[in-house]
Image (cartoon, rainbow, N blue to C red):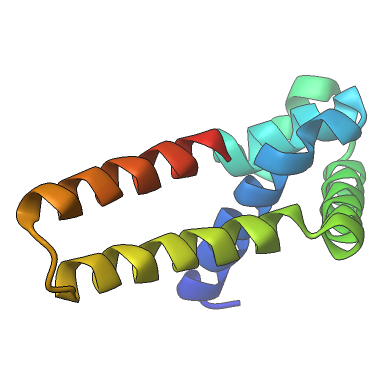
Length: 118
């Protein structure tokens, strides 16, 4: 797997983890945090928990599968990304419009507020 693909995977797992961490077991949460957030190697995690590297790998793979399953069923990350895309488009439309700077500023404040609420 290329460095770029690993980075994309790490970013995706971290985003999924942000949405679904509370649905994982404590062990799954811990291993994912160590591996993806703290950049521990499988060997370092194995030493910390006195288990084999293979066991760590299997725990992490299973946790990744669970996160993807939740996303497939609930789609929270997809919805979040689509809303962010819509906010970006809305801001671009506001900037291109013929309304006053003051009106643009008020609309952008509303959009910022809506984005915070999600």
